[in-house]
Length: 371
Image (tube, rainbow, N blue to C red; front, side):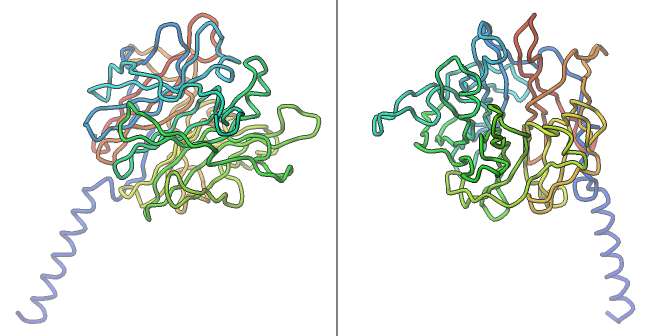
């Protein structure tokens, strides 16, 4: 083969490779979740008679089934402060990602007093905000736990800390730790000195864990503290020792004017879309999408420095049903169910604070990237 022929062969190979890449939207296109959200079918809703249902956290298991962890508390307790006084994390299962999901058991019930200390466990009375990861043959259930007197909302809310429970199977039994993995900072001036909550975790490319969490700062004279902000912590393994990272995330230019600009993040790492971290969260005041109360997507190269994604809007304040009607309330607590590392369903909670019916979880089918 002479030089010119070799050059021609190499050029043709390069053109072929570029054509192959160009037909792979996963490799070139920015992730646009909003364009892939399909209208909701009414059957794609999970509820439990007699309970408020919230905080849906789905995962596909090693058994090929679909597992949903959720928060629930008696309907009679009211949405709020019922969640803070009586929530427990329960577990449901389905043979299909679209459901129906059926309640199986209570994963993390109240556990009262630690016999070793004679005092209540840090998560003695309430478990909330589940976030589930399946990693190296085990299930890791991140959650918010707290304790109180069963009456005082501030006491329960301000005792919120973050923990993780471990199990070999989604149905348990779950091993719970005697101490939280994320506690408040001792420095009163720190943004996370009063309480920490809303864990969102993912496995990093090196096998370590990135965890984003919500926090409130102590403010003298204010029982409920100051602004709600978000931080990041990293550990070598899911149940390891977490090191808080400097700075806050999901900030907006006008953040100082609002006590909260983002809420309820869910995070993941994608090797299919640019080797980046992604997050979806509630856009509380519309700082990131212009849609107050909608769902926004963020992205990050390192999990520490976050910015709105190229296509930030996932949902507006209202969502669509298949009959063309619009919801009366927004989606909160968003999370994703993945199939082959591709987002397949968007889960969320809705109908909070309503007087006429209890809250429930819904799940939107996402079209495929090639559709």
